[in-house]
Length: 246
Figure (cartoon, rainbow, N blue to C red):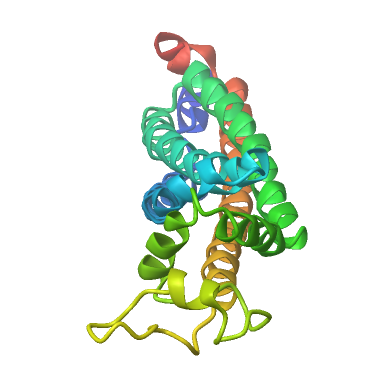
């Protein structure tokens, strides 16, 4: 009877079930890919907004522009790097079934989830606050400043646009002086206004950040859920099996 109980207990010494361990590793790998996507999105955004550096320095609304051109892109890159590192840590924790490592992983992912929610909220706020309108006011102010309006020409050349919108007549000197010129000295991109171009660029980028944040948040929730189940499973397992892994 004793030998039967001993064998019975040996059979109950659990190896972590695949329905906990494998999905956790899989979700972490998906998050690793999405972290790489965030890193790429942030790098592209930083590269794009670097062309607004001179304009940001010439404009008066530096605080509002800093949130758009610096805080959000850099925040996206930092979160992407953290996800790349933490998901590898999570895969190791799940594979080795280390209790302390899994607890640390859950804590770190919870912090990242809070930061991710904040970043997504910031993107939505910037989108809803119509940042393009703020840029438009600054655009007009810089255009009217003869000492600074050369930055408008540089920016219009980069965006391949001419003038902020249709409120300025094509016959005004301001239009002719600031718009990029062709070889014959004629204004280029007359039918492509900068307001429309920036609206497309900013809306698409903020939308991508928002959608990616939601997808990552959902997957991260499942990662935390499976890791918590795994922690409970390990805690309920006989100490002799996992004692050396703490």
